[in-house]
Image (cartoon, rainbow, N blue to C red):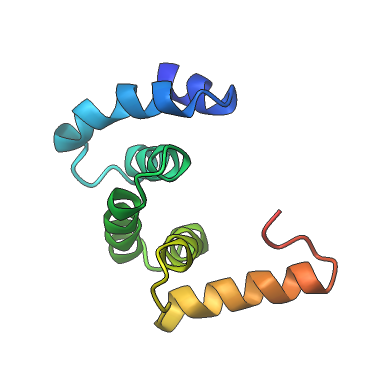
Length: 104
């Protein structure tokens, strides 16, 4: 709850500091891992976010938010997106270009 409030308040380093120590206990808790991935991106831990989003995309392949997160982190790291992640990013960019606000 405290980490979620920190994220909502834009206190990303605080959220990351609260979430990171508990990652071992999180296991397959997609909600927890998603919050940690978001916090990791916001504090510049793109490598960790990449690992987390890949894991999340494997855990829940039908959740487009994980594929989108993965594609965005890959782009930030200068990696080429592949498969569903690339498609998710292309769809969002197309929607944004059409005024649909896909990434915003």
